[in-house]
Image (cartoon, rainbow, N blue to C red; front, side):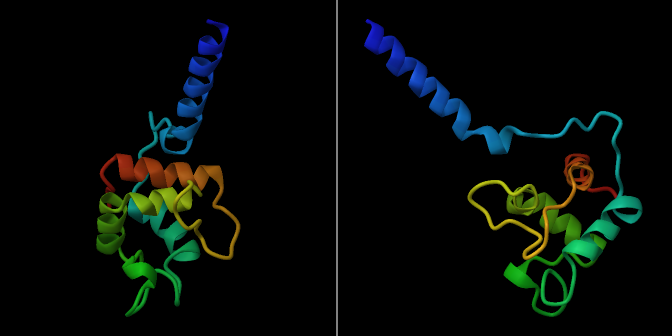
Length: 118
């Protein structure tokens, strides 16, 4: 009986730890960022640079250089936010640079959750 209890506890711990990255979401209560006021500056400085997610041939086909493109990519591609959050299973972004600050990540996440307003 003791072995069974241990096995059940170990399985539960494993299941809880596996989903940790994807369930770590920001509380967006009262946080209503817009592309123009908040997101454009972050994307333009860290993502939509030449050779990355801008230009004629953006990396991975992900263009973050305009409102229309950034909205489409951010709402329709879960990997954009996962990459910014450095979640497992995706390439961490921005590539070759430090992870964005928690405040910037929260703005992006809340912008996406709110439907990516302009």
